[in-house]
Amino acid sequence: MRVQVGIVGAGPAGLLLARLLGLRGIECAVLELRSRAHCESRVRAGVLEQGTVDTLDDVGVSRRLHAEGQRHEGIELRFGGGRHRIAFESLVPGRAITVYGQQEVVKDLNAAVLAQGTPIHFGVTDVQPHAIDTDHPYLTFDGQRLDCDFIAGCDGSHGICRPSIPDGSLDYFVRDYPFAWLGVLAAVAPSARELIYSQHDNGFALHSMRSSTVSRFYLQVARDADRSQWPDTRIWEELARRLETVPGFTLRAGPIISTDLTPMRSLVAEPMRHGRLFLAGDAAHIVPPTGAKGLNLAVADVRLLADAIADWYAGDPTGVDTYSRRCLRRVWRAQHFSWWLTTLLHTFDTDDSYARRLRTAHLDYVVSSTAAATTLAENYVGLPLPTR
Ligand code: APR
Ligand code: PHB
Image (cartoon, rainbow, N blue to C red):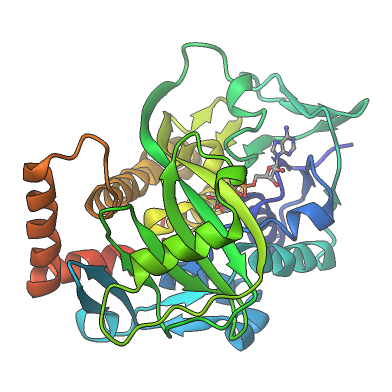
C-alpha cells in the first residue's frame, strides 16, 4: 500500500489533517488504535475557539456544530462571594467560543473524511513508524506495510510516534500539577447560560454544559483521587459548595451519566519534527484543561502542517522546514495561558495566607481592569490563527 501521507491517530488532529489534505488532493490513510464507536463516545473538553470554528467552516464540517453547538459571548469568574462576567462581545468584538463536545467534532470529521474516500483503519493494534530519517518512511501495522512520503504523528499523549523518535533527539519541558480534575457529565439542565469558573478554598469548580438537558462539571480533586472516594452525593455536595457562592444561584442536580479523571499536566516536546515524521496535537504537547486549549492547539498545528505539505508537493519546502518553529510559538502562548489560569483558579496545598491574598489581588485585577480582562478574553477565544 502507498499513500502520500500516513496519519497515525483518528482524534481531532489526525482527522482534520486528513480532511485538509483530502481537499488539496493529497492522498492519505489514517491508522487508529481504537474502534470508531470508542472514538466517537470519548467525553473530553468542549470549547471551540473562534479560529477552530472558522476552520471547520472552511472544510465544510460545521453544519451540526452551528445547529447544535452554543455560541457563548462571555464566561463568569466567581471568587470571594462575587460573580464577574468577562464579556467577549465588548472586550474582543466579533470573537466568541462555541460549546460543542469534542466527540461531536470527531463524529463530524469521521463522516467527512470517509465521504471524501480517505480510508480510516480503526482497531489496528501494532502501528510502528520506520525509516523516518530517510526519504522513504513507512508504517507497519497488523502485518501490513504502508509506504508514504510523510508520517503525521497525531496519536495523542500515549501514542507510538513520539517514542519512535531516537532517544536524545527531543527536548522535553514538563510541569505536573499536584491535583486532578474529576469530570462529571450529568443529565440535568445547565444551571446558568454561560460557563462558570469558580475559585474556592476547597478547590476549583467549573460549570459547563453540552445541551439544554446535559451539564458538564469539573472539580479539582487530589492527584491520586479515585472514583470510590467520590460517590454521587459527595460530588453534588462539593459542586454546590464551590459554585453556590453568590446570592440567588442554585445548582441543579440530576443523574450522573459518567465521570472521568484528568491528571493536570503541561508538556512540550521539541522540535515537533524528526526527519519525515511530524508530530501534531497532543502527540507533541499537553496543556491542563483549564483554558480548554488542547483541541484548539491541535487544529492550529494541522492547519500549518497541511499547508506545509501542500507547498512541499508544489516544490516549496519552506513550510515543512519551519513547521515546528511556527507551531511552537502558539503552543508556548497556550502553555503560558493554561498555566496562568490554572494557577489563578486552583487551591494548592502549599498555599499560605500570603499566597491566598496574592491570588485574590490578581483575580480582582483581572475583573476590574479592562486591559487585564482583555488579556484573558483574547487568549480564551483564541489569538488569530497563523498562516503560511
Ligand atoms: N496507534 C494508532 N492510534 C493511536 C495510537 C497508536 N499506537 N495511540 C493512540 N492512538 C489514537 C488514540 O486512540 C486517539 O484516537 O490517537 C488518537 C489521538 O487523539 P487525541 O488523544 O484526541 O489527540 P489529538 O487528536 O491530538 O487531540 C487534541 O483534542 O481530543 C481532544 O482533548 C483532546 O487535547 C486533545 C485534543
Ligand atoms: C468542557 O465543557 O468540557 C470544558 C469547558 C471549559 C474548560 C474545560 C472543559 O476550561
